[in-house]
Image (cartoon, rainbow, N blue to C red; front, side):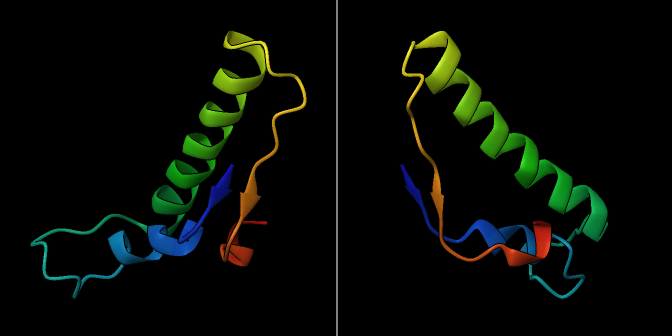
Length: 63
């Protein structure tokens, strides 16, 4: 699975994001990590696709 905008978590840590709220950079980053891990677990374990790959675009900041 190709996932673009992995770095989209940075938007929610920006206090000027026009949403009226923001979260800490650490919470935003850990939430994105959890999402990607959940997708991988669901695909590999729940759906039985042990060779399932996630190919991220961007997001170097959470490596």
